[in-house]
Length: 177
Ligand SMILES: CC(C)(COP(=O)(O)OP(=O)(O)OC[C@H]1O[C@@H](n2cnc3c(N)ncnc32)[C@H](O)[C@@H]1OP(=O)(O)O)[C@@H](O)C(=O)NCCC(=O)NCCS
Image (cartoon, rainbow, N blue to C red):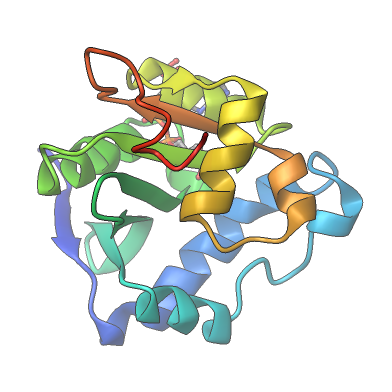
C-alpha cells in the first residue's frame, strides 16, 4: 500500500523539524564544516520559510511523519525545497513518491531544486527523478534570483532543473542575463 501523502498544517511544525533535523545528520562531515549546524533547522527558520509560502507536504507511516518536502511557487518557476526523509525510512521510495506528488501540485511550471554540491546522494536522487544538473554560471544566477540564501551557500550548492522549456532558457525571462 502506498503511504499517505498530505499537505502539512501548522500543527505539523514540530514533526517537520524532527524529520528535517534527523535526515540532515547525513550532511555532518560531508558539507563544508561552516555550513553545518545542529539543529540544522530551527522553528524560527521553518516559520520564516512558511511565511515565504513554502508549502510542505508529508508522508505518514501510521501516525508518524517520516518524510517532508516543500514547494514554493515563484510565478514563472516552482522550487522544490527542503526534501527530507527520516533516516530509518530512507531508500524505500518515500522521497521519490513525495517528490512526484509535489510536482503534480504545480504541473505546468519548470521545477528547480538546490542542494549542497557535496550531497552526492541528493544529486543522484534528483537525477533519477529526471532533473538535470545546471552549469555553474546558471545555477549562481538562479540561486540569486529565486532563493534567499547567503553567498557561501550559493558557492557550495548546485541547482538541478526539470521541465525546462523545449526551446531552451530565454536568459532575459529567467533574470540571468
Ligand atoms: C535524498 C532523500 C530525500 C531521498 O529520499 P529516499 O526516500 O531515501 O529516496 P528513494 O528511496 O526515493 O530513492 C530514489 C533514488 O534516489 C537515489 N538515492 C537515494 N538515496 C541515495 C543514496 N544514499 N545514495 C545514492 N543514491 C541515492 C537512488 O537512485 C534511488 O533509487 P534506488 O534506490 O532504486 O537506487 C533522502 O535520502 C534524504 O532525506 N537524505 C538526507 C537529506 C537530503 O539530502 N535531502 C535533500 C535536500 S535537497
